[in-house]
Image (cartoon, rainbow, N blue to C red; front, side, top):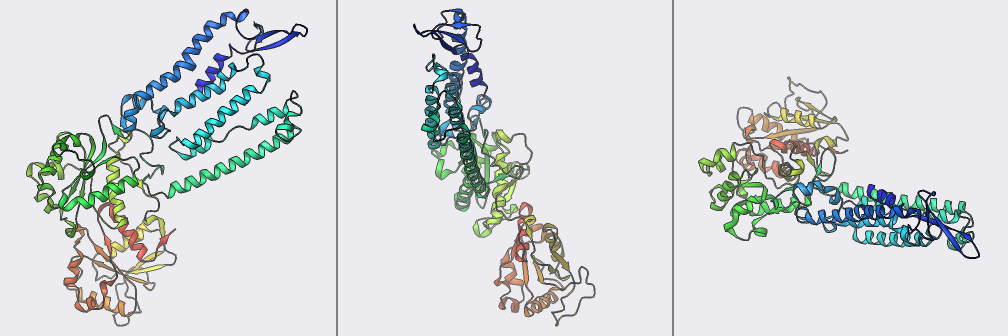
Length: 574
């Protein structure tokens, strides 16, 4: 905004207005509008009192309206490669005000827009210098230039944000009011616009402008709603896409993330990780061997051009020669790691202890004890999104844009969260005292979902074949659901047969049973096929496990487990 206004001030030294003083000879005299005490000749050529202004005008004209846009153009030309590659350099950071609002293909758009502004505010004064301030030629030329730029703007759509484009496209019909308000044109208002007075023209322009604003606001509203529903990760604090603006690659870096994996047990999973992250984090650059590897001998060079290295821990990974090359190169270069653990043995995974046993001793501490972010890989969508958010946060925290942040909470529009659920009708959850761990899990669900659920230890009265509990703590309301918590000790011990009787009675009385399968090793979690070996035969034959159990996972996935349990109990999104 400052550059066009300063240019306008410079051009005021050139702006004169002439008046006729002898009708017989047609002689005229002109005065400088900025200072009417100074005269010009027929036109402002500084042959008279204003001649001393000429050197100053041309000096400032070359310095400001000419050299400044050229300087901006040179700066943008210098940073075009780092910006295209999203690499941070001192110059690209310093000049971000010139390019950050535009998409990569229109890096130089700011200079074009600057030239337009200077033309409309200043250079247009060169047109018809003698009568320009009283004729329509300048207005017509300015309107044509504005219309051409508006058309180019609509076709090119250079802005990163669509709302910037919508706001840019709304301007000027005030020329009509000025035209109709002038006594010099009398009938021209009616001939050109259709209104005899400026009042009618003003009303028309106001209504037209209001309609334009309403349409623009509707377009912006639709854009905002569409963007809010888009399946992209957002910053939990601002709901903005984290990689939308700013530099996210340091100087000399080509990829945000390097996917290190062994083909035999990790290829399919890392392909999913890349595809999902490209969707959730637009602008993210990810190295995957099948897409980017040109020469196996240059693995270390690829690591060097990557900001973060993801190690996909599956069977055979830490025995692979090339994988160990990648890990060693990352550690030697000081690259941050993010560890993704494949825990499903059917998919080539194993326990951390099993995977660590494959690792050379000299690398074990550097990989497993250095405090790198670690997450278990899941294939169920709700849990997989949590894993992807952990990876994305680790990736983003190592970008220049977020280098000073300690944490970067992310969210995905429409994702399942326990705090967004509510029970449409009251739920009373029976957590049997014979089912170790059930009460603790029920308490966690109650804490995660605000209201609408209570817990009871009392045996439901509808289970007439069972003795009533005498120690029944909790609410006295009749249970609407039974929670069956499954871990390694569920069907073992002295209370196993009594618990089986309760399950039989609940199924006989058609009391809904919600099953929770513990996967956390610290909570005696185990693989599900263990239950087919220890569950009473009659319950297996009766189809106890025909309904899927909700997986209860550790770490950041625990909240997702609680949300799925709440959904199984009847909770819905608010």
